[in-house]
Structure formats: C-alpha cells, structure tokens
Image (tube, rainbow, N blue to C red; front, side, top):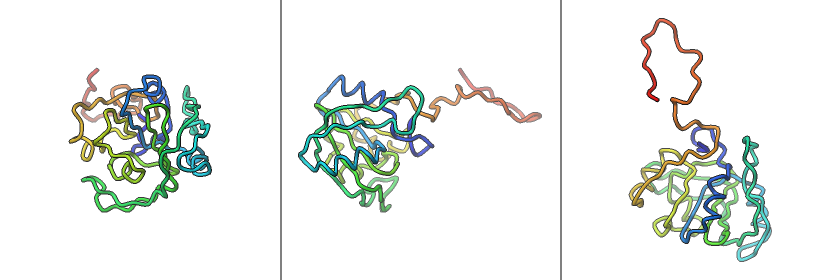
Amino acid sequence: QDNPGAGGNADTTSLLKALVTANLPGTVTGIFWDAESVARAHAAGEGATVELAIGAGSGFPGETPLCARVRVLQLGDGRFIGTGPFYRGGRFELGPMARVAIGMVEILMASRKQQAADQAMFRHLGSEPAEARVLLLKSSVHFRADFGPLAERVLVVEAPGPNVADPARLPFTKLPIGRRRCPLRR
C-alpha cells in the first residue's frame, strides 16, 4: 500500500522492520524514498558504518523510522536506463542513491520516489535481484513484468501506506444515482 506509482511515499517501514528482525540471508529491499539517509550515506562513503533513521519521513500514521547502524555498501548517482519490459529504454534520474545493510538485510534508497518495477534500479547499486532469496519491492503490480520470472512465489503484502490495496475496503460514499451498480465482493 506504499507504492509510489499509485500515490504512496515508498517510506513506510513496518514490513522492513519485520525483515530486519528476521535477518534472513539474501534479503533485499527497495526502493525506499529517503533523501536525508541517502545524503548521510554519501557523506560517510562506501565501506563506512553510519547511524541512520530510515523512512517514515512522510508522516504516515503509526509509522516510525527504522533507526539503526548500517554499513554503506554502494553509492550511485541515480542515473541509469531501464532494462525490463515495463521501463525498457527509460532514462531514470532518481538523485543520489545508496545501498546499505543491517545484518543480512540490504536496503536500497533513492532521493526521489520511484516504484521498484525494473531490475536496473537494483543493478545500479551493485545488487543482483536474481541472487536475492527475499525481495521486498515498493510496487504493487508493475514489478511483475521484470521481477516475476525470478520468483518462486509472489506474496502481495498489505503493509501500511496510503494506497488501499483492496478496493472493497474503500468507503464509497458518492456512488452515482440512477446507474447500474456492481456490488463489491467482500
């Protein structure tokens, strides 16, 4: 529900915190929007360890930053070309980017919002999605074109965010009068 391609902010952290707690090897997450954490990672430099407060900058209710000491794995300028079926040939300018790690979990961040629908976003920071055991993608549908073939299984997770994943949960109050109505299944 935090898909920036549909109006989310790509900065909610509840699911990320659960993955950090689980500390599963091969976990890669992204793309989180957090220009401040990216700037701090760039100031520290590749190979450095730095304290960050990742995410939750948009103030979504109930969300708090993930505060942790991270290793800066790789930095990028956010300029690359999309390679997957959805964004192929598209030029990206996501501003400075950073790949950091907390334990076994890698977190990819950008200075601008962008849904994770192309593997080039990860490769720009030296991360190969095909090698990940667990991928958390800030995308709700478009990721399937490029990441779907990599997956043994796809789980759509209803994590916090402003984008309601299930339309049946929307409080429809202004339905047109006089038109045929299609009931939403619950």
